[in-house]
Structures are given as C-alpha cells and as structure tokens.
Length: 178
Image 1 (cartoon, rainbow, N blue to C red):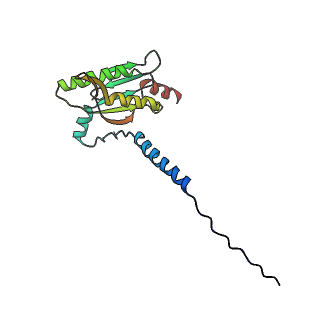
Image 2 (image 1 turned 90 degrees about the vertical axis):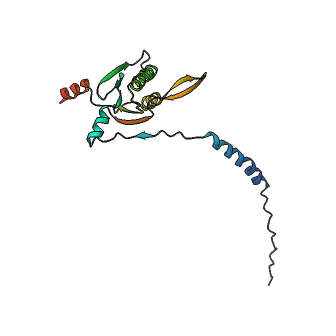
Image 3 (image 1 turned 30 degrees about the horizontal axis):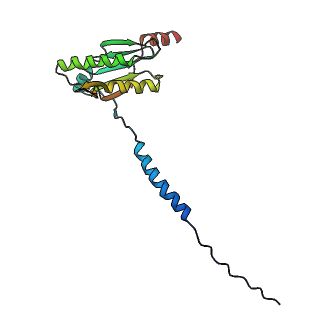
C-alpha cells in the first residue's frame, strides 16, 4: 500500500491595500456630500376645533384663503371676501398678486393693532400638489428690501389646512344629478 502524503498548502496573504485606498477616498467624499443634502421641514397646524366661545371668536377673525380651480379667494374675517384673484392668462394662479394682497391685509391688520400670524388655507380635493406648495410659500413670506439687501419678511407663517366649502356651482350640479 501506498501512503499518500498531502502537501501542505500555505495560506495566501490577504492584500487589502486596494480596499483601503478605496475607503480613504470614499469616506471623505460621502462626508462632504452629506453637507449638501438638507431636508426642509415646514410646520403645519391642523385647524383648531371650535368647542368654546373663545375659539369661536378667534375663528371669526381668521384670515382664510380658498383655493378654487379658477381663482383664489381671500377672506377676512372668516367668510367675508376681501379679494378674488382670477387665474392669469397662462392658466396659472397669480401668486404675485396674492402676495401683494396679503401684504396689504397684513398692513391693514397692523394699523388696527392686530398682529395676526396664522392663516387657514382651504382647498378643493382635486387641487394640484404644486399649487398648494406654491400657495404655502406665498402666504408664509415675501421678499422685501431692508437696508439695501433683500430679506424674507414674514406674512402668515402659521398655516392651517382645511377643505374648501362646496361652491354654489358644485352644489347646483350635485343637486341636478340626484
């Protein structure tokens, strides 16, 4: 009988130089990239429930913005129209005119000694997401020139949301379909 002898196989040395070079380059690049990715968070408040008399009085003096398909409607106090802003020629809402109108409302409120920071945005269920975001950006602040520099001045930074009441034309259409 023959005895077979196995040769001893030497363990190969693990070369991690290429991996270490990759990590030396990759870690700083990833850390630098983190600085540029930031998340913007907007605080949004749900409308307060009108359970007591004080809440009802406060709600009656609420600035409202209704977003309809064809126009924007600013109400102050609640339910009393201030200005109706129709869509522009391009078929888009006129956010520049909305900003100017809200600035005027804010100025008039300050003249009466009222420092209002909240607004309720009421939108229809099929309102486009970008329209809501553009409206929020418009009602939150506007660009003003202060001491030869442009700054963002606050309009109504505390935003609440709700559903727009059914318009008269929608109510008539729903009544006619029944």
